[in-house]
Image 1: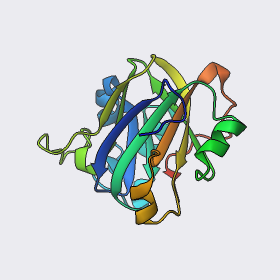
Image 2: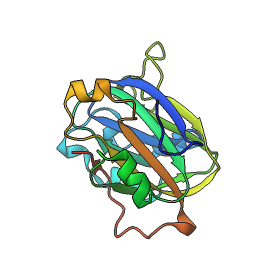
Image 3: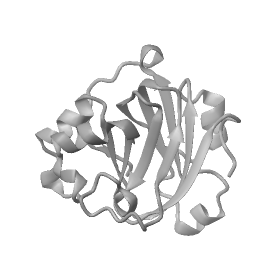
Length: 184
């Protein structure tokens, strides 16, 4: 997979749901204790106070997708994409941003088919991604290949989702901490 930056981390897995989740592996118990209903499935009623709470604390980022599909991910640590990188990537539209606290540096990226926080989790399913990053608080910027045809995605050598983790102290502040980000 062609990456935007040479030191990027990459992962691939199949996602059979319309939401992917980012969280610190060490935060599983804290997320389960708050118990947002989105852990069990997604509907409009799942944007509730519990989801707002985990978003406010940076425990869980929920990102709504256009469709279920193969996930080809790139994770970049550092500054947001510069103009040259944006141009090289070319087909990434607007960016979604969220606060994410990664105290252990074990970044989990999962969909419903491999979501270890779900009460329906099946350990025999294909795993999501578990990546080692520097521990810390981040603003994650999410870029997606929205609007491409399935054929274009299959032919692309680029990831279909790019996550840029910018240390909180170096990032532009968020206007608000949204409970659910939309990739379409």
